[in-house]
Length: 20
Image (cartoon, rainbow, N blue to C red; front, side):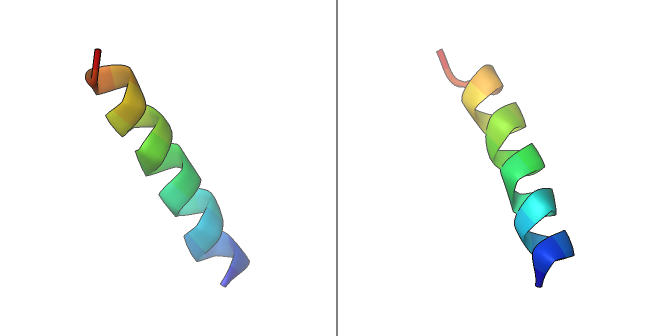
C-alpha cells in the first residue's frame, strides 16, 4: 500500500508539473 501511495505521489507531481 505504501509503495502504491509513493508511486501515486510521484505521478501526481509529474502531472502537476505538466499542468500550468
